[in-house]
Length: 360
Image (cartoon, rainbow, N blue to C red):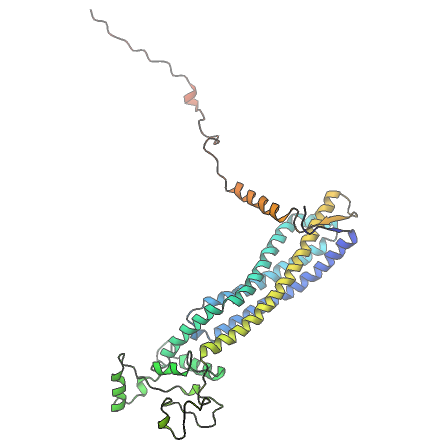
């Protein structure tokens, strides 16, 4: 029994072909939108790629870019096919192309759905990448004269200023790394030497943060040195003056930023998938309806269209049998090349006479 069986008149088939022609051109625009969203997401990720441990998450924008380009090509061809399918004679030119076109459209539509799901499933991978990347970036913050790291200080400062954040998970993360280069430390000062010697790894650690951690909402000049020492500054209580430094970590700030972008893009791609699914369904109805017209031999007669010719279970069983037969090997007993007599074997070999000597 056919799934989604619908009967079409000649006028309805022509109307369906015209509507699908228009929908395919709209799909070309949505394909360009997919391409633009993927390109935008790639640019946004590359803005802060220096504070990410890996670039594996770029597969999401690459997926959207590839799918968008495929959508433009497939739907451009689909518009031409659907317009010609309104005429039975023109349909004959596309009859052999229709089924491969429907299959390609189905896989393309599936890729759109996968792209939408990727936008919602990348959060955990992005969070780990930001955590490790920010930790390494803070460690190399002081290496402004080292090739490959000389711009990390600038990147981190811009990040903390733009997103109103400080450190990886908070401003206290700066207390655990040496973020001041040895070039700017007075090695003749006993206080500096004692602080270097007091650390096992020989790092200059202190309860201070870079200037970019300072909150612009603070009513007093920013305190970035001896942050945890209330007695070192006049009228300063680090517990009550929360506006002195940004309290949110940059990992959470960037994660929220990218999550908002991913959710917006994911919702847009999901809507595009629903639209493409509608187009695919219409093309399938048009294909089957026109093929049934050819079987009937009367272009003016009514014809049935469907999504699946048989039920879902029967279709799955039929496809499984086809795949099973393709992978089936010959049995040894059925091999026609076994036990084939050769020309030499067909000739009878005469028995050999053996002479027995007789004594005397």
